[in-house]
Length: 622
Ligand code: AHR
Image (cartoon, rainbow, N blue to C red; front, side, top):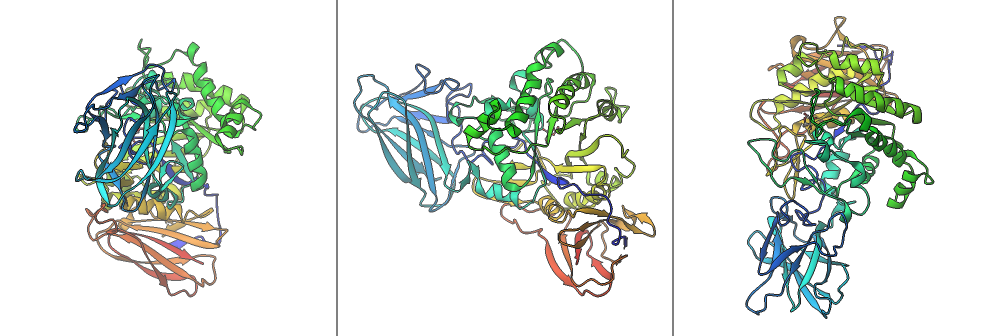
């Protein structure tokens, strides 16, 4: 392999490798959002969904605590010392408790009776075996809503515990917003999952979807303004992934919006990724063709509120504290702008209805915020024959980036490593906003991950036209998923980094700053003898980085020649491989497929290296 190391070429965008987050597979509620109580504000259509009540408990909405979330429960006393009255919540697939960990319980409560004097509730953390681990009593003596908090400690590690609340006095109490968070959270997000994201060193962070951006219908589209401010008063929304997959139906899949746009921007800042919010374009999910269904598309004359959502979001992120939305951002705790540079309009839309609507967004965003990049989407023509159809529309509208999605077989990924070699360099750049190799059966096996690693050499080789790429989906709860494979699997206590995660991490931590040409006998290395290669220079670390995928079933030796470099003083090879193509990392065996790094004897500029069968290697030369 000849690397033109002496001739650093075009820039590799800092946004090149990143993450795409969507609340699918219980990725947000029940996942990254650390709230442990399901339906904490009793606003699911079945108000007691997720709750088990005993004794006398009723749902009410008279003089509520929160205008947008008006329902609450009244828990009456049992009336007898040998009877109990109360309710319990098993969270999302049970509650995970860790021995010694503290859990913060919050409730809004008042005496139900205007003439009442004192009421008591007892709050318990309960293990999988139904034995309480800790309990706290809260006393109430007010008939106005009050926020009450107590901390409980788990004395054992349990996967499927629950929270139980008793009326422990002789008066009725009203309870709302019953919440439980583990102490190890970051701004309300599960600390272990935040670390899983941070360790990827993502350059771009696309959110909040995916299909949920557009919703099943217009009413259930994601509306960012509903997701900021006091979480107690954020209205819930149905999740697009409710009911959608016949083999996995979750009738209780709603978005609490506890993880909302403010938290997304904070998270982007923490993990050092550029935020890329995506907003509804005024069409319901995958709605491409005109018909009279007003639930699925908004008429052009009524589009302005959707456009305003985009303009206001830009002001929310970048406006100074004297602007309307900048002031709101400051009030939420972030006077400094979030420095938004790009915005996505629409997800997986590409028909004429989309282009008509996007045009209105483009005009107004360009007029008010000429520096904001706009990301459109693409797809084939309605008859499925013209694959360039979406791109043609995007070129006409002159958007900055086009979001392409592909979920294909591992073989497709190997066969398409040259996908971008001939893409038009003029006009919009590529954002591979969702992609993943879908193998047979397994969740995230090595065959799929290796094919992605090989394919990604093609993204890197074409970094002058591919500006960013994000694997999808990101998260899945092992007990509650609709879609596989996914980058990170988790249960109530732990998470596992898939082999695909390690591929993404290796690219994210070795993205370099400039492209380098790498060839074998003058040609791109994209499949011959099962080899795939790309190279970059990191001008800050002064490193030459060569990535080589060996998809062949046999080990191979290759010689890497760093043309233009005299003498290398340090060289390392990091190898990612598995015992079998069907291997995968699991919660019980999280380290089956992890990278190992070894030094290579460093002299001169030519190295003969070994590539194990079915492996991916990253070489770093300094
Ligand atoms: O990533 C899962 C889904 O796949 C996304 O919501 C959607 O954009 C695509 O169809």
